[in-house]
Every structure is written in structure tokens, then in C-alpha cells.
Image 1 (cartoon, rainbow, N blue to C red):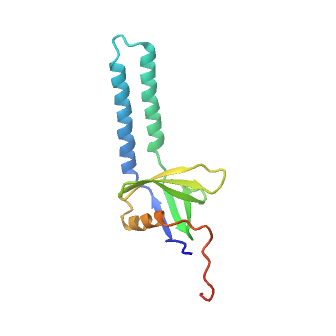
Image 2: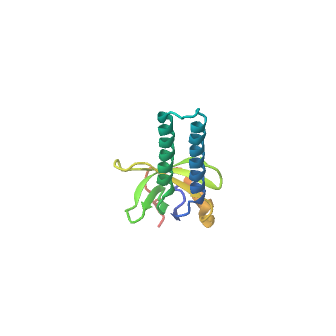
Image 3: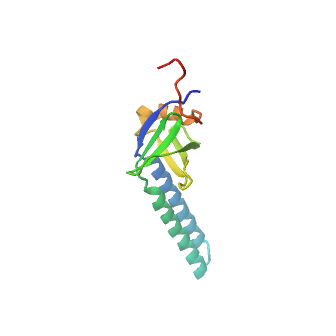
Length: 154
């Protein structure tokens, strides 16, 4: 069984992701403002508090999604590995959640029981030389066993 293509890339460019987070946050804040303005004056305190809470929640979520550490993603022997900063590399499964051609949203699920799933936004910009190889590796089937050389081959 073929183990699929090997790949090692550094991910550090998130411009498209950040633009989408900024646009979505702006839409949520505009919707909260429109909802608040749609109420007759004086606006009830509960409505004002809920609108303010919605804006604060949207801004907090945007800050959380905005800050993304650089990552190292690799596929060796048919298995995916993700390394965040100085932490050790962890093996896992990589799932394509959204593919828009020049932008992808991937979900990395660690094989270890203690690790949670991690969302990885990828864009072609910054990865141009490796983009085609990355797309091939992402869609290649996952190996269930380590690659073993065939008998008679060195």
C-alpha cells in the first residue's frame, strides 16, 4: 500500500482568515447596532445590555480567532503531524472541512486522547511553491500502518 506523499510546511500567513474574521465581526456588531436602533426611544435597559453583550462577545471571539501561532504541518509515512511553536509534534488525522481552491480550512484531530481538535486555516499566498503538493497530500488516503519496504527491495 502506498503511504502517500511526504510533506513538511511552515504555516504562518493568515491574511484571508483574518479578513474573514474582521468582516464577520463587523457584521455582528452592525446587526447588534441595527437591532438596538430598531427599538423605540427610550430603549429598554435589557435590550441595551443584550446588544452590548453581543458586541463584546463578538469582539472577544474575534480576538481569539485573530491570534494564530505559526504551525508546522507534516505528513510522513502516511501519517500527519502538527507542531505548534516549541511543543513536540503530535500525530493525528487531518480532515478537509472547506476547500475554496486558494483557501482551505482543515481540522486536525490528534491521535492522543488528551488533545482537542485544532482548526487550521490555510491560504495559497505564502505557500505557492508547496500549495499543489499540500493539496495532493491532504486528499491522499491515510495509511493505517507504517510504510514497510517490499521483500527483495533495499
